[in-house]
Image (cartoon, rainbow, N blue to C red; front, side):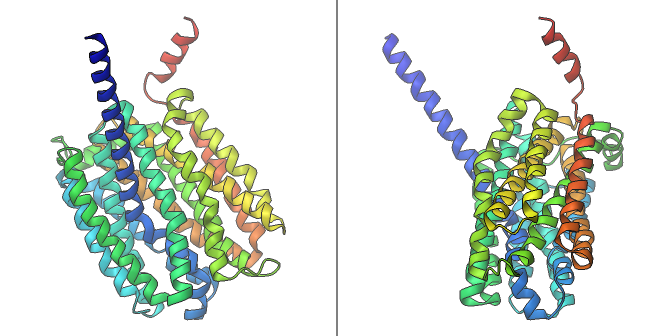
Length: 411
């Protein structure tokens, strides 16, 4: 009897573990299909510069105009989060995302190209924000960090495989075929969200009877949350600065890499795909701030390597920057989900508005620095943003966290 009971218990644990793994894998895949358009276009920047006949900074701003739409949509979701059904919002956003993506295949003039990228950003951010709210509201406190880390892992995968697909398709079939392919992926994401989010858990709009403005004020009065919002700004400011303009560095002498080879360069995100899922465990063991500082230290170590003329060292630098910034993003995103005491949907919207606002600022400010002063000035600006993020991290403390740690020290 005891052996039979142990067998049943082991089978139950295995089933639960498999179910948990399937859930995390599904979360990562939805994240991949949500954000793949954001980063894939960056891999074909040199081709777009030639097609439109503009400077790298001008094309960089046009491509990264999606971050403007993402910032705006983050604020919209923050305002109306409680009225939006999570599942329906995610599905509709991903379905609509296919429309501007398909229109980009017509290779419109630069103004319309920029507008379509903004609209893409609106759809991507709405799906992103509502999925984060869904995860925070349908997970236990212990599961939240792992679920959000899984979502950021899907973000990493979109950086790697999205860029690889984009570079390969554009190189062999042209720019128009590239955008048509990604419009199809958007529709796949909508179908996946429709099928799987229902099975994971019943999805309900955010609870609470207070006015949206009251929820906003509650978030903005929280020092730790405001610090997390500002940290999100700094992280994408730095990330966009490096991984947008390094394309031009690598395609010029002394490297002279072709488009297909440039796509392969983005295997530098592969280590991040393996390390980012560990962010939840690291936060649980060491705390948010030590985890965040450790991640930033890894990114900062990689910056000097980006200034060398040795391709292997540059690639190592990109690996370290990718691992550090993605790990830091996972820690910060998970912190927002735990620190928000009210409407988590609006807190997530605020975080994403700040996060993607940082991406837009990074593409503009660091693009101008790149055009005027070169790659060294761009890397220096990234270093300053990471240093600011490290300083802001001193405020990443949950209520009662310090008292708990002090009591543990005297046991």
